[in-house]
Length: 329
Image (cartoon, rainbow, N blue to C red; front, side):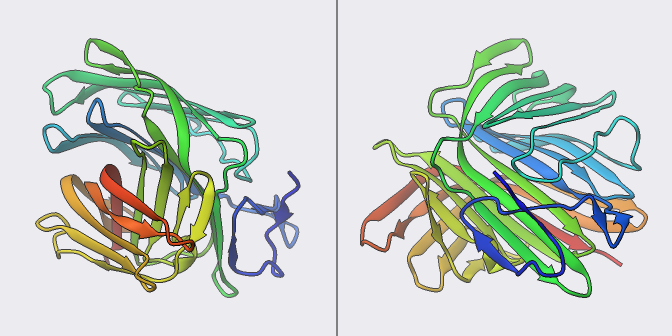
């Protein structure tokens, strides 16, 4: 796939497949790559959802493994937010490029190896205390893009500040093994995953709300949902590999994010959805110049989506998460 480099002529917009790549130089100077690779996978039989983040913000790096236990309505995580080190690999310049990313310290390891349509991911958190009382979590999984499936790519431009380019694959096929304490278990056949690839240059927002959910329905329907308050360009639902673009969405939520259900509805009233929070993680960051608060809320989604042909997708007891971030002065 031949991708177009992002330059001053690249128009803001969205596409059903990756379109752009990050140029190695800008006006003769090397481009400072910033961005994140985020993998989220769930297994409803095991009542768990796991999210990993591999991020580089130029002057700081961030890596995390979050584990949500839906049986006990609790979540735990291990995080690393620090100045860059030689333990961090350079991010890839396009969503389709083969690459190898690795980060490790005493608390966690994240390795992402992309080869063609596969992403092999290894994660370890040997000291993480799980809600079950067991210690240690590891996973060795493979995400596979399904041939012919569409993805969501969105380029948000600002001529003075730069751009943010995001490609999201939902849902993806996932297989592999998880190590929970002393237990070793295979992921069930109905496990699902989503992968978000984001790169940016100079453009940021003070407040972020990003939602992802996905599932395999009992009738075999595969679907994944992407929502963002940062830009409606990132709003879409993908059903059996076909992308349906969503416009503006009204997201009604409690002030604390967790005490009541969230209600989500798009401007055409095709998507009507509730999210019941199951557990959450809340952090404060204070690594200059980064000062902010982040919440990761894991929930159960119920509702429906009416397709243009009148057919209805029913969303019932599906797992997903919402990430909220706000800068502090």
